[in-house]
Image 1 (tube, rainbow, N blue to C red):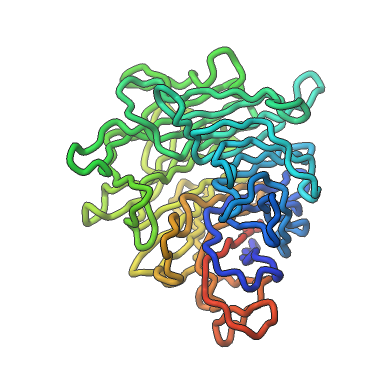
Image 2 (cartoon, rainbow, N blue to C red; image 1 turned 180 degrees about the vertical axis):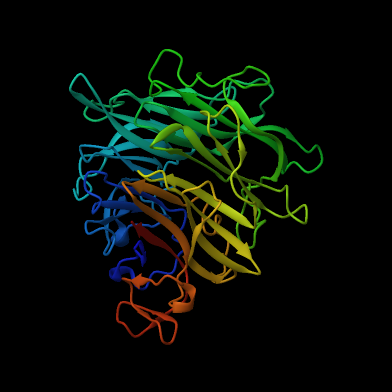
Length: 461
């Protein structure tokens, strides 16, 4: 029987911590799934110049901090995403440096090394890096193909970008990385922060992005956007990368999955409880069928009120040419993440605010959502803790990956130690009293107010 575990990954040494450690990411070593790296907005203790990643070497049961990321700011690093290559154990990381704000693409040979990660790329005016890595073998030579989706504001046209290296494993900086502009369609004002990637072992690579096409002339935060999917059938390393999927209507590069969607996009405004909205996107591909691809996005259409934030899903069976609804919409949903396991079992995890309660939900289906295995991983009041001035609250994304038949993921949530908040169970490393529902400092006596922690989950087949 499948099992699910949830772990608060905050180490015991940080039991007194009270910040919003949100916007998490995760990577699992396919060669050794006991090796897992997680990230969040977590500053290094003791004033290290390097921000930490969370490291587990026992399959997610226990976690430690390893400060190896350049630029330890007040929140640690800025945006951060991680990805393991399929073979060789190399970890690739995309960050916004916590001190400079620059995009940096990093490489580490192992997850336990105390040596700071090597900087392969460094440039400014970039947002929300997203890392996907895959190992390919050509003529007996293993190469790590690495993709870093990002929103590059320095681009004179559409800002949706993916930095691609066909062989990033050992070369000196920039290790083959170069930016590819994705949005080449006339009429784009700018692109949204999320640029999401799904890579298939056969060389097919999909990239999804938001193309903003209009803004309300009075309320500038009211935006109109399209969701676009580009595809490359040769790993993104050919002469014309990501030009293999042309739109069925205008013939431009990238199929528009949906058009004319409406959303309130203001990074400094809370529009879903204490959280901001406007930039939620995920894409996943079936490892058993590179033509089967899944999309999730959010907007302000389809609810009972014009301010409702709604999660939508779409599925394509023909490589992104045509799309149909995958499951019913989720009002109040955000932070979707797709993953598909080696059996073709489809997983969707998302967070939802309803009746002032945040919940994190994992859904699994093997028949296109005709039947669904559903689990509430976490549920807690939406106004605890208070956000203060920090945005995002839970984060602009969470992440789930599949390795073999198993699903691994991470989300941020209220860390009140209450068994009722964790219907599938939970383990804490930090000191906590589940009888009194209180967090405790390192002395195991002084009470600590609730905050936001990163939580790991594993659904084992």
